[in-house]
Picture 1 (cartoon, rainbow, N blue to C red):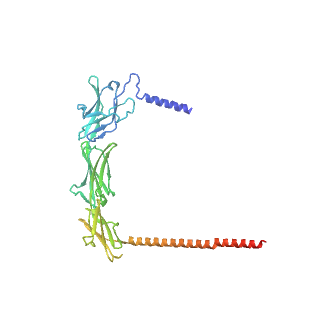
Picture 2 (spheres, helix red, strand yellow):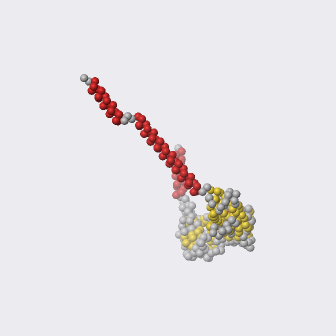
Picture 3 (cartoon, helix red, strand yellow):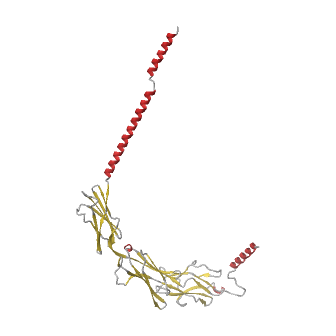
Length: 387
């Protein structure tokens, strides 16, 4: 019974799908326009508008016309192009009217759709779509600030949207920061049908923010968004990292000093007075590395080496720890001595083994000549006893 009911239900649903939009005798379809978005953003001077409509049978074969502002300004073939596939009709009686607008103006414009057929007959659909060129901008505020930020000092970043953006509150998203912003302030200014919108962000930069790409993205509704990016320049005081250290190998002293800061700091070695000593530097965005090697005498674990790092913001120094490393030559000597001793022990063991084996054989075996003499003696005795 349940199987029959299920089969009947599936048959009804199937026939309903086939007859979706079927008309009773003497009836006709109504005009209807379906637009998924009221606001469409431009991309590269173009705008994609998904669209589907229904119309009476007499108008279905009519000409589809898109216009700007009012029907008196229809778009030319150079300005609009059919683009099927942007919207899937929901019912069988719907026809797709999706298009791509080309050479879209920078200012916001309103577009509509109408059908023309027969002898000057037409139907203008009341629905409209807004095509906007929304632009975002990220800047430091106030504009008199230098573009060079200072690590540890609070500053404001401002994300402002052009007046061409739609007059709805967007969702602002910030990306690219290495620490959490402190405060966000929003402001909105009404401008006729459109609004100017901005969001101010209170932020304390860190040294790692140098050359970081900060993104401000504004989202309007489902498919409309605008974004802007800026690269931060963050100046910071010099710091000497804990990876800096010295090592002493016999009489060869090697020291490495790693410092970060912007502008990149200069590294100095008060101990390095001889110009023949070898030094080299290697830098990244915020880190500089300096290494020197020199021959020293009477250097002990109590001796110290100082590294000095400075840029225009200040100076810092650090006394580097010295790790005394046993020389490789001594290590090689000990290895050779160990191998020689092991070889001598092995040879001595082999000599002892051979000596003991020879002695054992000498004690256990009877010399062949002795056996021959005994055999001759026994034969002679046997001959005498025999008459």
